[in-house]
Image (cartoon, rainbow, N blue to C red):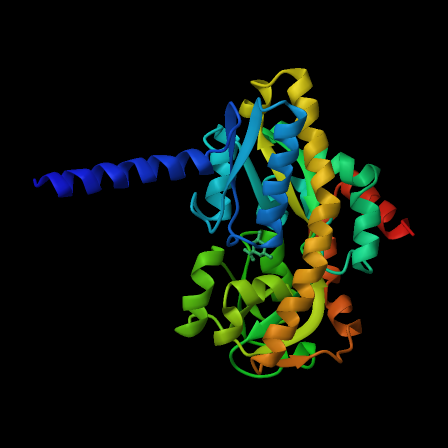
Length: 329
Ligand code: GTR
């Protein structure tokens, strides 16, 4: 090897080291947090912000590094890894928790919330705290809820203007039995599938479409292959930031309190980013020529969801929670 080549390799190696130390941040202990979304997405930025606050609160004892873009895997798998303590923190939709933690089914019920404001009111109050507390029995600590807007159907075939138009179509849903039944109740077929497989599955015609909010429809690129979006807004499902109980148990009570405070303090920041991103994504998608059906009678959609409530809201505990949510003004 020539001297010059050796020199340039040494330079490269030190540049890589410098990069690694920058991304590993200045904290003594850096917690690894997973997110399926790309860098810059509101959830990713909110957890980064939470990490900064945590570093300040703990005088540099703890920090957070966000592994965005599903670098650590798809949501269902990263949830298991977080339960095992392989991943310290995770920002996920409540959907993939539905099959594991029954309390998460309630805020994931179709049309349970009248509006995003109603969802905030519920999740910011005692019902939200009860749901966060339910994670602990499953080796996770629920820290805070983030926004996920409202989710609507998009597809590659035709504009959907009524429940009838959905008949026989194939949609991807998150890995939750309740969402499979939700799509079934509308007369369509559901395929639970990891988020990362949706684009190619629509492109190759394995499915006709999926359902999501404006920012995810945008950042996933799904709008490029599914150009019909119907704002039926069947779900206003919150997202959640959790910590592995293993990691939690290794922290001092003081640091545990700092984690909780930093997570809660990142919520208003997230909501601001979210509101701005929703607008930006909607503008971009409309400008790209997507056909958006926004005038739609939601009545028949809501009516069709009755069997889903009957099947999933069975125990007294869940019935009571649904009732309290409906009564929340
Ligand atoms: C997004 C959500 C992700 C993921 C995704 C999906 O809106 O933020 O956490 O659940 O939807 O549909 O898989």
